[in-house]
Length: 288
Image (cartoon, rainbow, N blue to C red; front, side):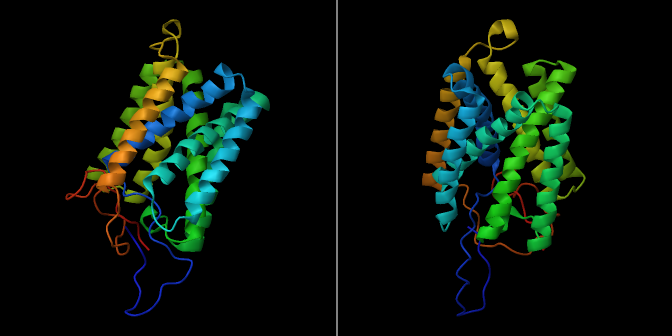
């Protein structure tokens, strides 16, 4: 876990907490991609299969997200089950925000993609101006946590719009689209490992790209064979991925493999995207 360093004998400020997010290990990326897949299939399941409609689905999932984030903000440290429940719900809500703009309001995908990209950029600018850091290793105040979750919401919405834009414009199909986004993520990793590309920007670019990757995988698994999928359906795909997420979260809760070490300061963003003593996909901090 990560916390601010204080002078000996000094009490921490009351608003400070243990770091509220997990260490960015390989487990993090696997669960994150699974969450994005569930965000796509669960939104389709509630909207179409259960007949709630896009608007009612948005209300229900939005309310559940508010409840989850309420408890997430009240927690004083990273709790795997609470954190990943919030990610699953925010992945669904991010998908629904994009879908509402395009399907209900008729906003073109080009517009929503640029709009969410701008919203994410503004969030990063405000976050850095306020905290002088975009590091996810130091989410130990509620203000930083608010910036963090706002950025996460916009990454999901942006990834949804950008993924739909690419799929509709290029018509590549689900499997080819998934491979394309996986290649882009691999390119970011190569740039990080071999070209010393900044760790924080590597993280956020990869985080955005995992959304269309997960959505493409979800569509490939759930859609009918006649439409280019494997025909597992939204129910089967959602349950399968939720079960895997649950299993990994239980494992991490018991093993604490994703609990950040007790050090939160001092990296300049030039370190390895993965820590040698842990999984190769851990993220060091950015410059303070």
